[in-house]
Image (spheres, rainbow, N blue to C red):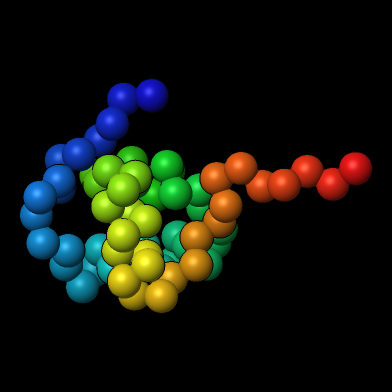
Length: 64
């Protein structure tokens, strides 16, 4: 999967943080959030941690 980093290195806008919160609430995977916001996966996780936003686990545990 190609990385979408069109916003890499740019400051986060209020609208981008709001979109991150909305997508996280909808349980959108972090990789998809990164593509939608043009940010690296690392940037998504860092901003979510900074803002106290819980992201859906990348690899959910499997129940047997």
